[in-house]
Image 1 (cartoon, one colour):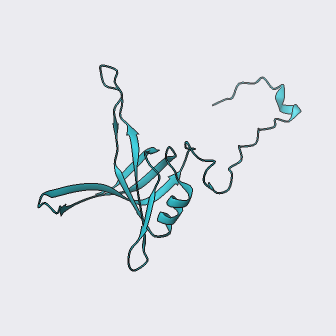
Image 2 (tube, rainbow, N blue to C red; image 1 turned 60 degrees about the vertical axis):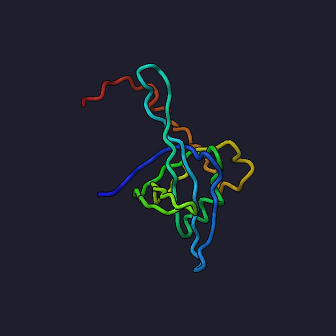
Image 3 (cartoon, rainbow, N blue to C red; image 1 turned 120 degrees about the vertical axis):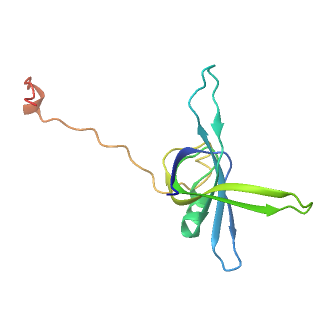
Length: 137
């Protein structure tokens, strides 16, 4: 099974392009922190992400560098030959879903969609505020 779930922050603004058949393709990379090593240093991985279709257009519109995202997709490997004849191998994550879960560095610069209001504070009726009973389970 080829399935991957990642949470990280964009390392650069998404780049949107269209194929000749007008299919949207968006590319960006994210930084994913690794657990700290024994010597206390912090390291990270930087996978390349590819998104297609309407989701690609939404990524370009609403995401920017520093924004936190959760990605579900699959790993895809490939290769190509450079002009000088050397072979280059690639690994990228083809995203099936991209959830926008955090704010980024330049969120005021882009239209980030509808604002999400905080959860309302739970109001406790006066009759229950003074109860001091143990819960039987």
